[in-house]
Image (cartoon, rainbow, N blue to C red; front, side, top):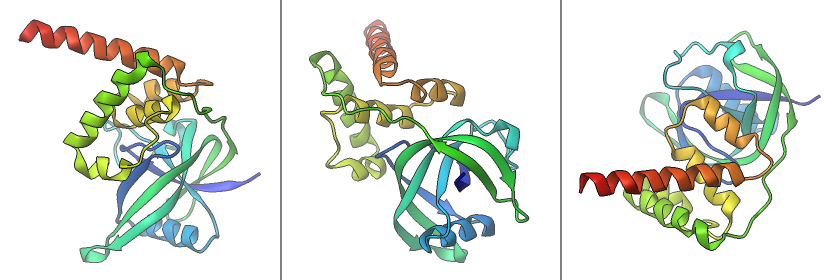
Length: 200
């Protein structure tokens, strides 16, 4: 059974998403070195803001995202800034802790969402997502050529950026398709429009 290193993060990435991360601790620098040398892949797993830095093995969510490094830069004080791209979802089966506290896991691939053409009723999701990217250029720069005509791609970008609790994100990404996420987003945006109308 394959093994993968784990990087818990409060910032989340899903397949085809990109995320910039600062690598500070020696255990994660070792993880990165092993990945670049082709010795062992690593995955981002979800961690909530409420959790402390000492990762509790029993709290690692079941679904994580295997990633690859697409760019990196050396920063001051020996830090590294890397940009990772989500490759595929995985299901974590068991977690272990190595001597330097790096977490590793046995895993299996988890089903991917198929590409789904965007329907007219979902166009508002694209419009709002593009507005969000414009307001956050450090994120939007990664998606200048995004798959905005693919509902699965659009919904996964929304899941990454929305401030939802981890267990809700896990519920959404565990589905066979983006249908539940799309319904949730349409309701959320509709309620937001009603709220905007009330305060204007």
